Figure (cartoon, rainbow, N blue to C red):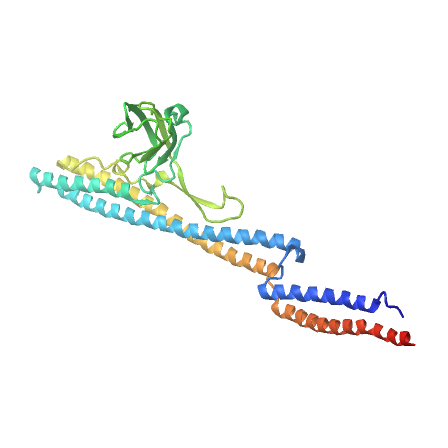
Length: 364
């Protein structure tokens, strides 16, 4: 019999410590609902679950992108329908003017409405925007060519933003405290303050120029080249972010400006009315083509959205298998360890009292 080392108590204490650790681990899991509450529980599984969780969140945003893309297309479709109605009325007017039961005075009145409708087509196209992007003037997805000389460091320009400008060439020039931007047919001049950061909004041309504090009274100069581009929607998240994960639409396929529709002839005479009818027929075909592009893209995006949501469900199920806790199984383990903890506490008490028998020997 020994009193310096109580082996039974030490063993009971060791078992009790391990059981209490398991009880604490079960309580952490049961209170959180997770099978993995720390990396030590399953380091490999935690890594896989974290990747799945990131993918699920990215896919969720891709699904929202798809819904917003359909909103963009719905706006474009509605405006295209409005342009179609105006073309129908213009064809009706041109048909009226193409008959000799209308005199020159009548054709003049018809022409006034015809021109007003053509102007309204351009106004509609110029104002149909989503988040600052003009949708139906061929500029959707347009970009600034980085070789544009107006971006040179000596000009005082540090950024050029498109707010509706379509593909083409622009020229920037400046004089004493003014800057002028032109595309050859339209020009706009704005005041410039030297040595001051400022934003020059050439609204008539759909371009905003941001300057540095180094801008001078006459330094803004150079060409700006706007390249035709594509509107891009990220509708998935498989890792092919610049490839199959995106759906694009060519901005040039959605150009419904009157100049693009080539409805340039007014029905001022019988012959001109006949020419106008031919132009309107071509324009209506072009609008229908644009509507077809919009409709096909809407169908494609809806299918992509459905696929993304299905993928999210499957990824969530996979993550749940790895990360989530089987509550029934863990509760069974927790109950077992609670009983063992109580038993271990009792046995530790018994082991600690076993040495009391030595006192009998000491009393003699």
